[in-house]
Image 1: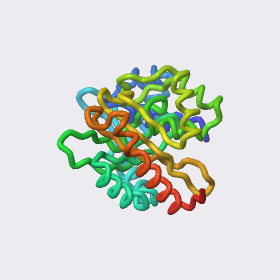
Image 2 (image 1 turned 135 degrees about the horizontal axis):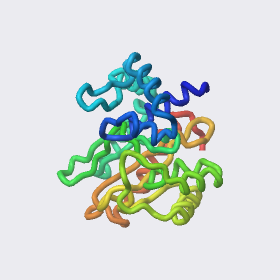
Image 3 (image 1 turned 90 degrees about the vertical axis):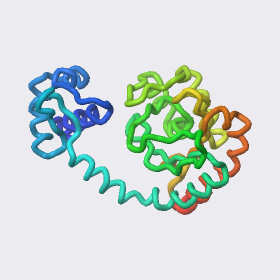
Length: 250
């Protein structure tokens, strides 16, 4: 990858991770490059429709073309269409919100969900990144990586759009990742969002690697540890079924 393309991607990544527009100075500070370099990159991104500048604040945000590209990419993901019917059945059985997540670099991205019918429920922000160093799905995505890479991600704790409510220490999460390798599932209690618990299981491709995770999420008042463990057999079974459709043979 050329240096100019790398910096352009880095700039788009920074714009995508925040809920507000950013100034040239803020982007330069976060990217550790000069303001003049950022200004040149932004000029190109604006011309391509990948970034826009607010005429009043002079700050920059993502442009409309990023939505076009994201939607086009999402349409090509067979994973969603394969998993969705099984996610709906899992939601009907458990009564809780079922999510589908993938890793994007050192972050977690929710790409689909089937929402609980209960008035008291938890939903995901589709397309909004979460840290890969917190939460049940992250344990499983990290479990596929070498220990050195896992320790790097846990040590850096790269910031994302959401600040976790009660993240475990790096060592505690490393042990949780090792436990998920052994059991084939992950549990998290109030880590990312206070009062919200999650169980997750891996979706594997033909090569046996984890391509995504399937999760059941709900309020801790209803989905306590016993509740999560009651959901686990059906969650693991559903994940195995979807994995089989993706070409995985246990």
